[in-house]
Image 1 (cartoon, one colour):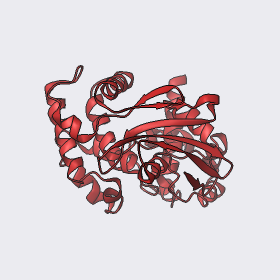
Image 2 (spheres, helix red, strand yellow; image 1 turned 180 degrees about the vertical axis):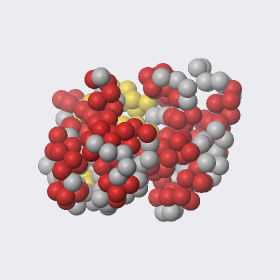
Image 3 (cartoon, one colour; image 1 turned 90 degrees about the vertical axis):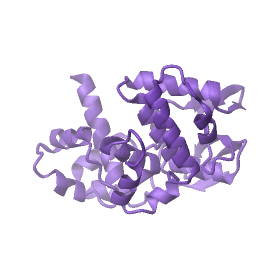
Length: 279
């Protein structure tokens, strides 16, 4: 499988910044495993960068799985105009150069994003990740890739069958069942949510049991993945104040990031998170 990378991109830096991927032998690529949208199967996908091309193999799937992996890496989007934002906004330009023109890494699907938010509610990030990893090992499909076993998160059909999940209370299990049902009905398909006006997509996702405004934004913006949607989360707002020295002009500043407002938001969000960790 191959995809031409449109715009500047560095897979190694993406992996370093976001982490969590299994590395291929020789560490020249990454491996991800996930239920493929349509929910007929799961797949493992190996991705390597060769100059301006992303190439790799799909285990247990097809071109649909490869396309989904490209969306996860924001490689389905045209980033050729991304540097221009930094040319007229020196703050963004500096962050772009420092992070090799970092793009957002998405959840494998809006379905997995919704599950992650529900499982992780009121838990530390590490606790939520550990529970989801255990769910993948116990209930998801396994794949052997280069001598390493990787596990996909349970597909919606399998998740709907579970009556109990260790570390997940009954209310959260009920919420997960609702997510699984919505996914099987096609209501959480990435293409569907991307094709809606942002407000409509958020309103649709908020119909899920236990999903409020914050979770809905995460499911739509980082699950479906929108290149030019503005993030209004507290961390990004605080990052704008720290970087630009003002909170009053935040809306005007964000408007200047078009047509890559979400990509720039991720840069600012990451900066603020690191700054707080160092304080």
